[in-house]
Length: 256
Image 1 (cartoon, rainbow, N blue to C red):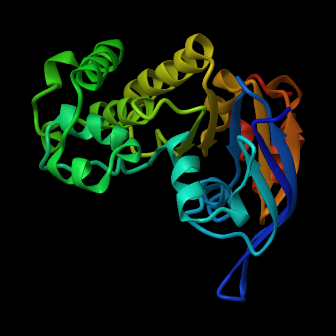
Image 2 (tube, rainbow, N blue to C red; image 1 turned 45 degrees about the vertical axis):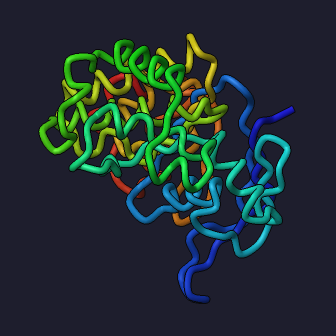
Image 3 (cartoon, rainbow, N blue to C red; image 1 turned 135 degrees about the horizontal axis):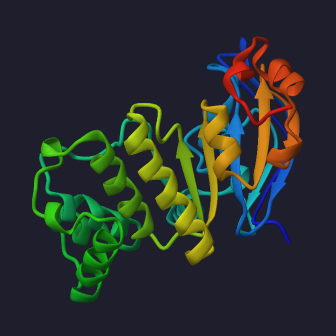
């Protein structure tokens, strides 16, 4: 059974702007899927529909056995616990320390009062430090997040997501704001998490070469419609042109 299913999903903003048009696809546990496409193609909308940051206009989305469109507030809370989100601009609380931001990944498991007072168990704190060590952030644990580099901030975002114990990690342009060296570190970590922890990963990427290197499957989207869904090795230069309506793939040397 798929961990995620889109069934004829459409999304229209303000009754005018068509973001998605009748898209359908399934994602299976353990996959690393990259969604590529030009700005405004609908990539971010797909991720935001999965965790109900936006509601679909038509169709249905099934995640981990839940029909997300029909979920009430309690069910949405359960869905979001199992779908970690990594943002392009990190979405951290800059005035708080790294370890505090990471522990925020447990808020979905807390009562409102426990969350407000920041009550975490010793087991949760130990796990947070283990994740920070895995991501090479031990020395930054007590630094404020506004003291970190962009690459370090994104690793904190990954750590916070892992604290949720997710079945799925959603990455919305996770390297768009980073230099090539930091980008490689982030993608290597995401790939390792997918391989060793068997956590399904869906990453929106604008960089075609990065998608080709890391993804096991690529979904190409343009103008809110899927125009490619398959393995990286079958993504041709002509198909990239169709996705981007330009010579976006000209610098991709391993695409035929």
